[in-house]
Image (tube, rainbow, N blue to C red; front, side, top):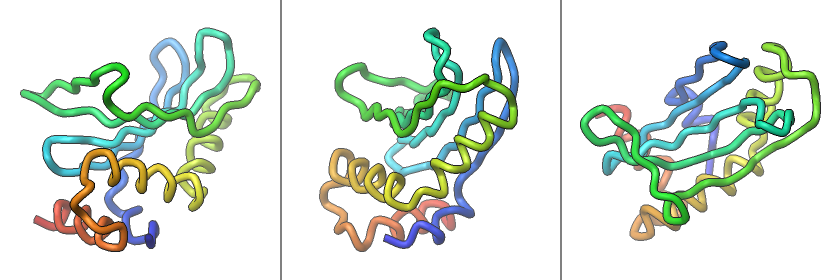
Length: 128
């Protein structure tokens, strides 16, 4: 799976509400969206997770214990904008982690698409 072909379709933004947070989204088709988020947890660690949600009437819905929810990275650091952006980009640039994630997404939500055709499938969605 050539992940560099998908990077133009990643949409990333960093913002601050209570704490710094960085999010990257990728439309998957079938009203589904992959979301990778880096944020400070209640325990104070900096955590990067991936979730797949369904977008219905402009709202994201996530079914607990059914939809994909994976922890990709975690570290105990002071949570600053730089720390959030560094961990987030580091996770996105980690080919092994993202490849495993996309293979899991494909297997769970799109089992009829061959592994070597999944990147093409996502490209078609974004080029339509």
